[in-house]
Image (cartoon, rainbow, N blue to C red; front, side, top):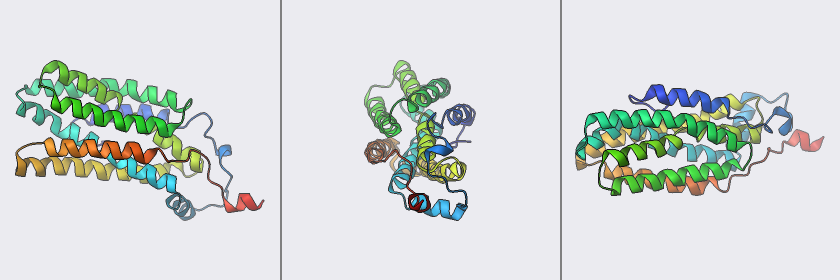
Length: 240
């Protein structure tokens, strides 16, 4: 399960496609100064001392928050707005379908343009789409369009995120370093689901969490812009 909730199958399907396209063509082990003796502890220390990696991890939190909240609470939100539960099911299916397209497109673009710009655009577009969706009158058509847009922006963050990890640190510890970024994603997912329920119980509305999702999206769009998309300079390689 990528973000939690009942829509796990489409999320996982898109996730596997996204990861397959994650490493850009120019992000090989030769793109980073070789560190054959680097231990996993050294790799962790190097990554978390690297400002761009920390920004990437923080930004990925928003991805999990938005996706998990939408997956779990969107059907109930639609029922509250007078739509049928069937519309919620079709919307989640639409998200899953367009998730495939978005992941493939993001992976393709990641090899041809700066990945930080892709991430920033995705997060800003998510914020904008949520704002439009919750302010428009509820209808089946607008909900399905929102599902299609959300699907395009769903796990399209994975190729540029994992690609940036490979670009900065190489592929030797890529799985572990991307795992830490994904842990941030899953923490965001937990909070998105939990806050959605708590806020609804107390306020009787999901709107506060929708607006929080918008704020997170804008912040992540800004956070990703200063990321330096280049290999780290390691002391051993510099000395050589």
